Length: 184
Image 1 (cartoon, one colour):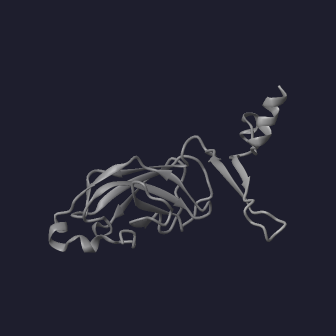
Image 2 (cartoon, rainbow, N blue to C red):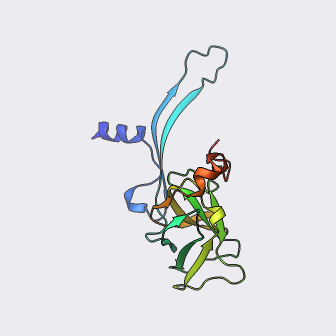
Image 3 (cartoon, rainbow, N blue to C red):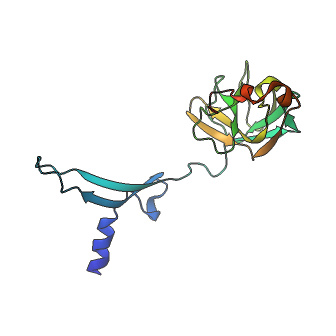
């Protein structure tokens, strides 16, 4: 049993299964070593490797969002969203169009404001139009994300959906595709 306890101290962590609600972040130290090749200092450099696990704060998204119909840069597109749970929304909230596999909230191809003059109510379905000029010409697999300014986070994602290549793509060319500076 003493060996098991010794192994446990080598892999320290901030949380256990019993206190998951209290700690939404789990950090586990995998390795810890020092570099003994340094001879000048009495403080040897150390290296550690950690695993970071973030638990979901919500089981269901605060906002349900979906594209409507077929999307392509040949016509304006529609999306709908519904606030599922009450949260502190803002007129500065927006819905971004992201290529599947995006890394940060700022990787959007384009966006629309959620509302122009009033905030949505819980369970109210709202439809927004996305201008055809804000839709990528070459198409591909995309996702919509609702960004909450007050929570500084995406609080709802659509299922992945396909944007069809525009008929304008052959005429205007792929050099116009770099809407947000991401394809350089």
